[in-house]
Length: 405
Ligand SMILES: Cc1cc2nc3c(=O)[nH]c(=O)nc-3n(C[C@H](O)[C@H](O)[C@H](O)COP(=O)(O)OP(=O)(O)OC[C@H]3O[C@@H](n4cnc5c(N)ncnc54)[C@H](O)[C@@H]3O)c2cc1C
Image 1 (cartoon, helix red, strand yellow):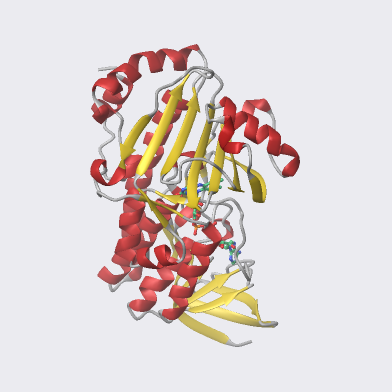
Image 2 (tube, rainbow, N blue to C red; image 1 turned 90 degrees about the vertical axis):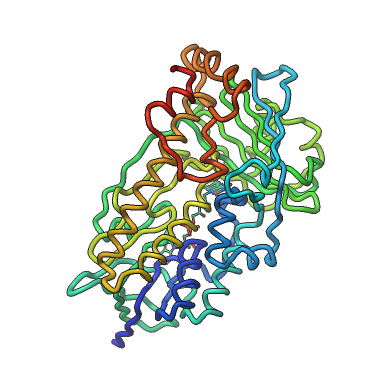
């Protein structure tokens, strides 16, 4: 069997693996990407990249590529929250003038972006094998992959293997990483609609405190909209396929979304639901194997952090690899940084969940205390979701968030 050696192999060529392959190939590294999908299809994934993710995409030199591949800049955000059935007042936000990066968000169709960024990696000189599913790692004298490419078994070795293989990462398991979990109380369901009459220039967020429902709308242009719904796991249903579509729409309306938006919609792709639990690995590097993107840490999709985190991982790992001759040191330095910013994302997400998503008397009491204070002083609402995870989360920040000081 032929053995081919590379500097870096990424297992997975989604946004994380492809972005890393592009920037490292540009820096002269011999890159191989092994991607199981011959062609990307809709699997209900991130279709909004928040402002701090836009900054990461710019740093990686993929932002213009993403815009050319159909990404749309969205400057306005509209949020409506309160008790269901009441006329709750919308809050509007202009992103470029109110976020630390001073940038809009970007909406897009995920499979199109994956194709575009993976093509950019190939254009930069990375070798990309599609339709190749990696089934294990051998670690005899350094990590080694045996995979079938064009019908022939081949052995691949590298200085560094990067697991960029998503939420159910095999690399994580083969590398012996322990997966930690914060169990969510919600599922996140998503579907793409055509023919939706919602605003085309702003994202929409509707939340009902009494029933625990959140509906989100991200316009992709020409009345095509990615619609998400966050609903309690306690209801015992996993919305999926066309039979559950009516229920999906009804629950979006129960979250406060205007019924007329959904009147003439046509589904594109399938309806699918995901457990919103956080899963992550502490220190996502060991023995020449690094994890990035969802493989290193997946957050609750409802807060829209996944793509941005994935791009930050690619950028931080690149910076460390370019900054160290010893890639083992680079891997550990990446993992230490990852732990810091992922901890901020995770902690703030759990605060928001306790304050805005949980139902019942204790959660109502938390809201009664905090939300009037937020209306007086918006800086209490920690802005990591749009502005990024370079934020203190010490006890005084937590107390101001909950209005407990
Ligand atoms: C319902 C839902 C909604 C979301 N909404 C948002 C949002 O609005 N905004 C946001 O920022 N994030 C969102 N996310 C999260 C976001 O989609 C992810 O964080 C992001 O796509 C992770 O990118 P990745 O490259 O790490 O993984 P993935 O996109 O999962 O890519 C992994 C790649 O690895 C390949 N692969 C897997 N195993 C193997 C193998 N053994 N061999 C070869 N290839 C393999 C897969 O085919 C895939 O292409 C959402 C997620 C979900 C589930």
